[in-house]
Image 1 (cartoon, rainbow, N blue to C red):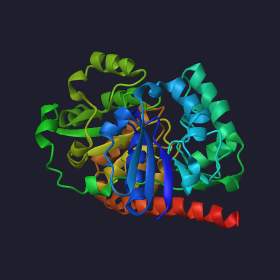
Image 2 (cartoon, one colour):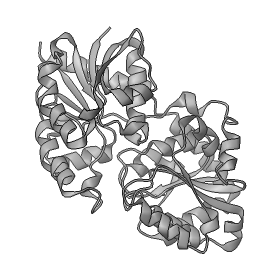
Image 3 (tube, one colour):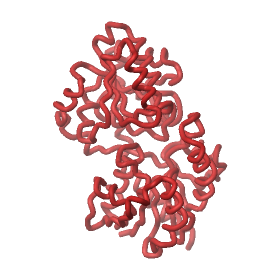
Image 4 (cartoon, one colour):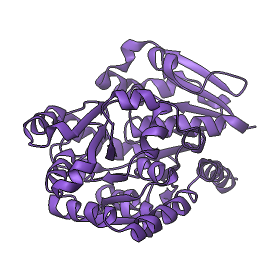
Length: 379
């Protein structure tokens, strides 16, 4: 049994894609390994993987969660006070957020994306400096970097000028157990949110411009009137930076009564939300991986998505793609799928097969393999 030190600082309160990645990897890692988890007090109270035989929380006070303080504390103080020598290796599951400046044992870091280089105005000046200058300087100190897609690896080679042999592509997955459960759970709550007829679905934090809700709404407005009478547009996710612009546009739309903002949807309600959608539309400008794409496929609904970043890579031939900057193209793909029963059926079948290729067991096996590779290299 390996002893692993892991930090989940930068957890987002469990409401982001990186949070889901952290939940899933820790759940799988702690099945056969002893994991010590660096975590804040408030996050420990909501973390879905409980302490047990193989998982121990190392809890730090909430005042350390303040972003700038946490960045520098995590970089320069934590590595010298945590006592790394009693562990076999360090695993940092959110390397684009939190790193160590020093390692005296093997280190493996998962890196999710470099969306900041693709989406203008995504972050303020300090955060851009942090991701462009500070992160790459200290990321190079890690023994192995896990990129969650070929798309992210390509960005790291281009923007960080890292050597290719330092980066290993290691695809994510999704929570099979949750999405194969009884999907009737949560039906009443979803209906209460206003979804009383068929709907098109998009699950992402309500963020502008990166998640591209505005162009999806514009595409929906362009749908034939008969189609809009049949289908609402359901947008699930917490309000985030720039979200007020999306809400304001939707409120002024002539289709405002058909555009449903569901807010943050708890994980146990998501299977029903997916299963009862008619189509999943993923218009994001940039995704390091895009877990909802696989979640939707696994529940048997067709997916249309952007032709950018990792989405065509992960979706393969099970998706139809569009230029996310063109609402007319998004509209065309929606109409194409909903108007063709044979295409609809084929996309469902291909989606189920594609989703089954991605598992957390494969992901964790690569992490452990990278550690063993590093040990052998240093013998």
